[in-house]
Length: 301
Ligand SMILES: Nc1nc2c(ncn2[C@@H]2O[C@H](COP(=O)(O)OP(=O)(O)OP(=O)(O)O)[C@@H](O)[C@H]2O)c(=O)[nH]1
Ligand SMILES: [Mg+2]
Image 1 (cartoon, rainbow, N blue to C red):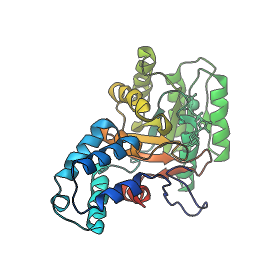
Image 2: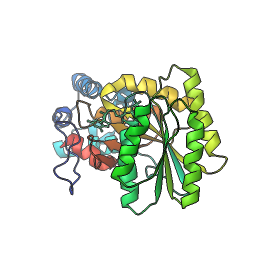
Image 3: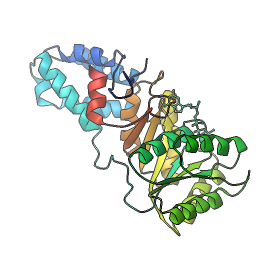
Image 4: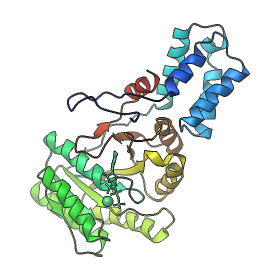
């Protein structure tokens, strides 16, 4: 059972099964925090995948907190920790930007992180909310990739623009945007091929896809999809994407699996890009809008 799970389709609670919260709350309930206690806090955060840099920042901020400096109750300790974790995830622009008509969303990331699946889940969400949508299969490396996206399109009755195998990805993106304009779509989502951050040519291609689209429409979001189970490694790979293209939001997938919740904090803090959605399964409804307070409460309870 992962950090995120769902009781049923209607209810979307964030639940934790990790020992992260109980460990930390235990330590913070001590009325005074000595060096050993601080070391335990640091270790717990690092083991939860918060990352060394972010852990050190959070610990420093906690050490500076006046409540924790003096004798405090378990309740006070818990409240300080909760607020600190929520603050560490603060951002001003978490909601999906679909302010333009059409708004173009480009999905990027390394191989197998869950891009195509996320496109399928996201278009379902947008369509259900009454938005006319078009999908573009700009992953032209494998015929199966277009087929996979078409299957997702069918599930939400959304048209999917595809191109021949090995055709120019930016041409497919261009055609998808043209289709979006022609039918008066609100949102056009472009799925791209997974690429290794080390392949400069492929990284340049993303810039080209974006430039071609922007001749005719507005790219309101470039969402970077990260597999949460790859932990700090995934984070290092993701950083290259934020340097190559202007990433506006993160989707952390596979948080239903063995991923540790701290990765959410590490990703947002270290990439300085808001986590907008989290994937909690392979199904069409398994994408939820990220909410920092719910997440932290899930982590601590
Ligand atoms: N458990 C779980 N599995 C997921 C989630 N998101 C995607 N997957 C699975 O991850 C695998 C890869 O998903 P894809 O959507 O094909 O990934 P991709 O990034 O498009 O892959 P490439 O196009 O090959 O780079 C599939 O088996 C998905 O079902 C998630 O949130 N939770
Ligand atoms: Mg794909």
